[in-house]
Length: 398
Ligand SMILES: *Cc1c(COP(=O)(O)O)cnc(C)c1O
Image (tube, rainbow, N blue to C red):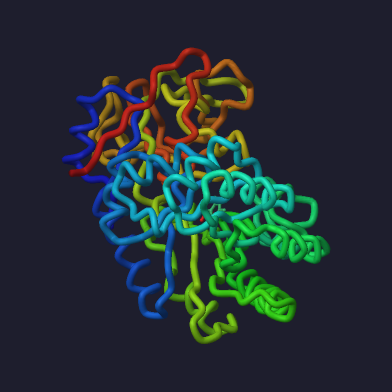
């Protein structure tokens, strides 16, 4: 499915840039593929809202029957507002405030994913004050290496997330003491943009050990929640649907699922990443002695992933590659323009405001439309107003 054609590029020419362009058909087909692949095994999927909480995106995801994985009180509220079933909301986060816990208690969500022994006691206290029983899963830090970028690894001993294995005896004590908690099961989330499925095999081994530990200590485990993290192919944005089949098959093969147990997942990136591109215009071209710079009207205020964790995004010059030219006179379209290397940068007053160095692009001109691909996850949601920038727009294919 190619995201761009002459018709939509012509339309982009009329619009103010920068904006996120959402291809709703790509989104629909991705959600469809995930639903089919998970339903086959009876697995439950919660969409990790922090990846993208654009209302139109949420509306479509909700229609597929997925639950929501929230990491703040406002996400819990937004999930409800967009029509997600409250009985399918899970709430994780290493620093849930009392206000957020109370909101989730009032909402009667499916489950708190609890990240410390202290948090267990606080949820117990707040639930007791309301005369409620809070359903909890223990987020365990399994010390499994996700083989992803160290900035987005979450499941190692050195990470702040979850409860370390050596603390489980304290968890058992707390669960016995806390009468306003109902123990549902165990939760894991070891990182993001994981492309090596072997990692998930290791995770399954750890989940099996951990559920045995809880059962041996008198806590029946009903829910096994493996979190999210499935990666997408940033180098081939038109290869747009993640391999959900193989991903779920790993869990089918290696997870020891007992009768009556439910298996849950929390996918974010893999559901939304390929459905959007950030569309920008070239403002200026600076040819230097050592470097050519393409200065765009989008920067780290619109898409911060490259600057925040050295993420790769494919960059395309839509005007030159499609023959729908920008404002300046360019070479005859019959004539194949030669490629140049550019550092593609934004307008923000920070030296790190660079999308990528040495990008091979057709010779580019002021006014050319530039697409930064695979921007649907952790893109628009991380936009900021730094430099008092305008809020980035969104445009939808339908
Ligand atoms: C961010 C997050 C996810 C989703 O991660 P992806 O890499 O986007 O799939 C799932 N669970 C928790 C607890 C998270 O914080």
